[in-house]
Length: 575
Image (cartoon, rainbow, N blue to C red; front, side, top):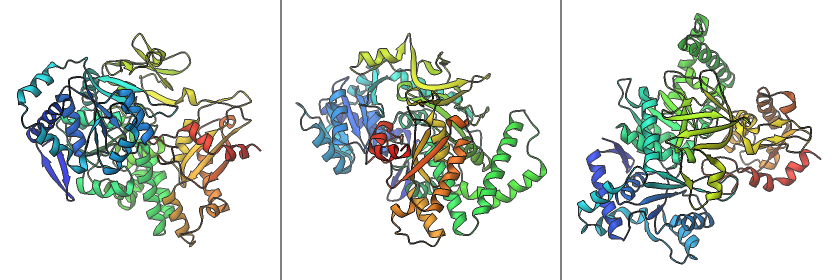
């Protein structure tokens, strides 16, 4: 069994042979539809089983897949289809189909289209009945490691997304080396059969490479179309994975849910004590594991045992009850949060990478955990720090070019080294720590350089903060624009006996809410010098979402868009 497929609320096994048969049948359909070797197929869908079949079918037919986020606008779809030259497209829903048709209506040759919800795989299978299996074998074996596998577009935080051309060699290097580095997780060090529920968007390179890694290592996978905690939790409880790959947002929300649940039953202070105990216990236990200390004392062990009964086991239950490992990527995970989960029995390994590096360039090795870092280079990969602090990566995982954009390619590739745009440092053991984005560095009017990422990551890890934007470029001091998390606000109102429909305009002005946010700001400021600290903040009524164009599909803030949308509020901070 390589996959468990959800049908009518139940998970059903799919063997490797069954999966291969389905892939071949769909590949034959694509060939019958006229797909030639090297043709590109756009796939606009959330994470689901059919996406996996399509990905491998496109490759088996000699084609190249072009992932498109299901939340993309018509304008974004138009750009990706036109820039990639996709001749074919598969959407998930009728709404996706309408968006794609609207976006591509003006093209000289709109792509031929199928829709998953309308039976795309069945239609392609029927179309390919007359194509011999040998034709698929011929096309598949004609591919070389240097053949293009996918054109994967960046998230576009600063402009038009760029199409990263990734080869089969890139994908294989990433998958094979990730499996090797994560040997204790991917090759069963426990009596559990390794399994994971894949909920990251398959339009994101991390989700795609994770899927390949799991199939290569014979790890059972299931698919979930949503990363929203309320929709994901019941799937986790039903699937019961042994490890997860997510983004910090997921772990922050699980932690916040635990706190909110405790507060509802009048045990908020107990949860805070459980958090502090977890951080201390995790730190001490980790020092012993790494041979740097004696470990937790009897008193700390007793406190941990108590809160394991009251709090930590509930956290494990939220994730299905069997999760012992997790991998976090996309942005830094706050160190105390990592230690909390460690004490709760879930080791979170951070990784770092970009679309241009075919996902992870570094991962914390299972036998050498180091919370706060993003680990060591995956095998076959080199990392160095440039004179200005920029992280550079070289190896088989590094992409070859941005499609049709030689100028942009030459800006980031130099003798095989990819300049990531991220700032970081390497410790004496070679572990990488990311400190921010080079282009995001704030220079105050006093000449102080400030990396907003450190402040923003710590802010987001504390309720009631939802999203945030640290500002201060050419300004006298650093300030922050802060949104409130809707779930936390609902809980906050309930605890204080206030009406659930209290307007957000009143909530953001409530001195008690501002005092709670000030605690989060104080916590963020603990990580920086006074000159870099947040001196003022404003609470705004809205949210940063994909729908309003302020978040990318991978949940990164579009800084320029947010600054333009809230220009008046930012100006008022310095009035």
